[in-house]
Amino acid sequence: MSQKNNKLIDKKGLRLDGRKPDELRPIKIEVGILSNADGSAYIEQGKNKILAAIYGPKEVHPKHLALPDRMILRCRYHMAPFSVQERKSPAPSRREIELSKVIREALEPAIFLEYYPRTSIDVFVEVLQADGGTRCASITAAALALADAGIPMKDLVAACAAGKVDDTIVLDLMDTEDKIGKADVPVALMPNLNAITLLQMDGILSLEEFEKAVNLALEGCRKIYAMQKEALKAKYVNVKEVEE
Image: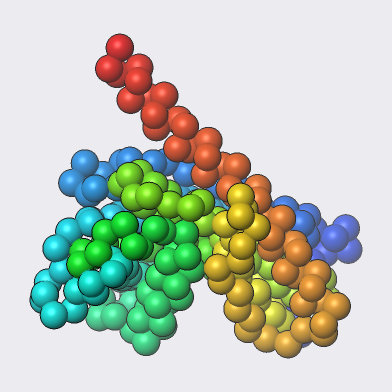
């Protein structure tokens, strides 16, 4: 699909999937769906389907990796072989290793790591179906899974990307926009503290476009944050009803 022959935004200003430039994809979030994990969450964002599970805090193995003053957060981001159109190798790719680090660094500022010295928490993110923006959706789901596991947190982390498609700044890029678009700016935010925990850029933007993209992504993060809180509440309302 070449960029010359394909306009990603039509004359009415709508994108390929019918969204306006500042519109999020449909999002569905569920919390606490895995009984074998300490905490879990599932997100569908557009065609993305991502599962996050938490194990810990627990003793660090091997023991020499333990830190005396804080816990270690370990993260594994993995795309299932069937998550993309052409079967992906199950072995971890360089991109998966990089995104594991990116997700970990986006979540660490939200956690009171000093509460559990000499322990570790493992975050497992499994992408079941990918459609662009998986790093942001993974951060959103992993933050909820941490909250579900009862890990003390300063705030939830919500993540969303904005970018440039044709000559327009748009919110929440899907796969085609991600591949053919001109730039991508993933952002993660702790909305209650107004603190950004992730800011990356791929592509070329003017300073004005960059500021517009960041502000649009932050707006998206705040909308997703409201959905995160609703998903957490929904789980505990269900638990209460079952107990009664």
